[in-house]
Image 1 (cartoon, helix red, strand yellow):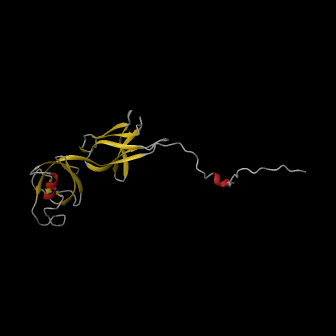
Image 2 (cartoon, helix red, strand yellow; image 1 turned 30 degrees about the vertical axis):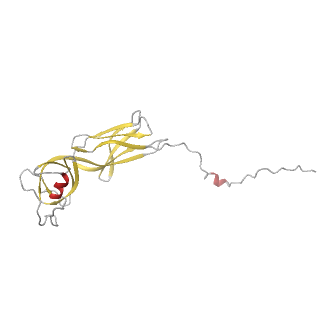
Image 3 (tube, helix red, strand yellow; image 1 turned 90 degrees about the vertical axis):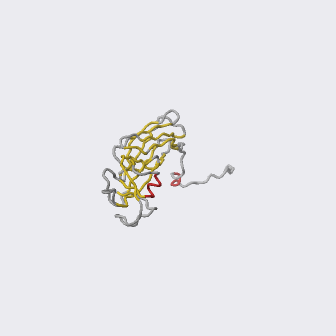
Length: 211
């Protein structure tokens, strides 16, 4: 009996069945979003409104953008808005009390869009406080020696080492309580010479303070 000849064709590699599951499958394309910040106003008096404007690129419409603040160890959503026709957004938030907190904006992403986060720095909510300044030398109640380069403030009640943010004339500084005082009625803070100099503060006046 004659057996028909078999013409050899291109070799087909044999793939073990178990390997088939590991071969990458085609995936839906995902766009990579970017949060662009246009304006940020995060230094406000307590009860007044902080604002953030920006855009989500590429121009994605009707997407939720969230302003989040780190209270303690957890991020909390404090404001949200939706992007317009060109991907632009506006967020507003009025802190009730004084303090300084890290802030960020976040886009959660979706089936065809990646998540995006943008850090904003500190959200500072202030109260007005009457202040003066002092210099000279000598020891400080919280330890160390006062010099013309010492940065900090004196306060009668806040614990030594307490951090606070001061704002004056558009300038902002993050300082610690390093001494006790002032002992003049109505004044809450005594700025060291270096703090006074860096803030552009003169004599006696009102500063914004987060504590």
